[in-house]
Amino acid sequence: MEEPKGIDYWYIGENEKWCIKDDAPEWAKEEFEEYFNDEPDENGIARI
Image (cartoon, rainbow, N blue to C red; front, top):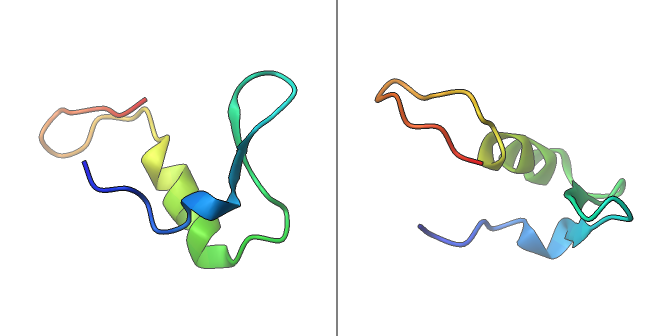
């Protein structure tokens, strides 16, 4: 899998889960949400 373009805006929060910085651009926030989406895609594949 290709490394996300907005990964520089990601960090591990106090709860030891991945978070995105508040000042990240909207495209990076959308990419983050898509990357961690646990809903299956049209092929039945879910990412964690």
